[in-house]
Length: 247
Ligand code: HEC
Image (cartoon, rainbow, N blue to C red; front, top):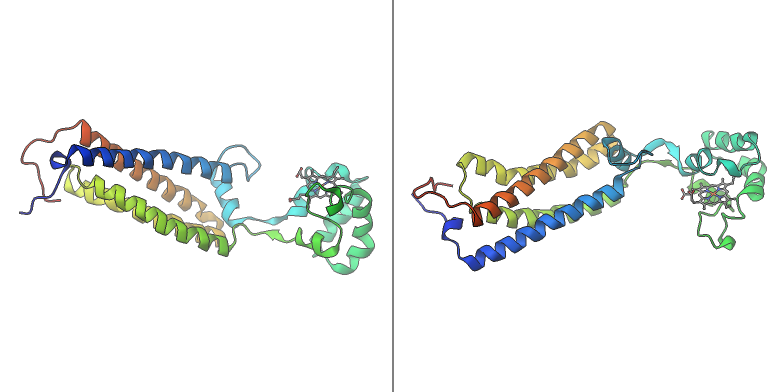
């Protein structure tokens, strides 16, 4: 029967190195969660992170456009009357056509909006000075673009696989029931891959946002468990002699 290396026959210097790495990983993970929170929370208009925020992040709000959202929300007070506001809303719903822009929409915008929404104002707001500029704000919000998902996927897949691999290499020096250990080293990878594919599924089918959340949470829990068990066994737990070494 082969004998595998365990924490009990690892040098103190190596355990210090391993511990420093694991502690840095645990802190890094907390920052990753904070980053996730700040980029996704509140998309649904409510404070805090929810499945709905994840759904909007990937799938978008197909019924909403940036212009429509703004004029029914924070910008509604800039219209002289509800009638003029309704003219703009109807124009968006009818496909934001160029012909009616010049006659119906441009006068309203020139009168009420471009004081702020023009390059001349220096406020850095989206300009509402020409058809093309306004049209750009009337495309519906379809969530994350495939291009950005592909970019984040490849960074995630390469970057996180590395971290999981090194944490997993340290973790296998623990003494645990063999089945439990085999499952625990695989789960972070399986959930990471599920999470990433979940983004694409959510972009098309918003219901999959739940999968993204569950897979992401499971990955975090299994990753943190590996770190915690490794640190505990390394420094505080002395295994009995002749434990099952077939792992
Ligand atoms: C007094 C200056 C001011 C006027 C007038 C004004 N806006 Fe705005 N607008 C802002 C500011 C500041 C923001 C960004 C902050 C915010 O979203 O509340 C903004 C945001 C917007 C956005 C959202 C842009 C984005 O990034 O999604 C739209 C669309 C918009 N305004 C349309 C209009 C329309 C249409 C009018 C005219 C009826 C108008 N605004 C009049 C100051 C102004």
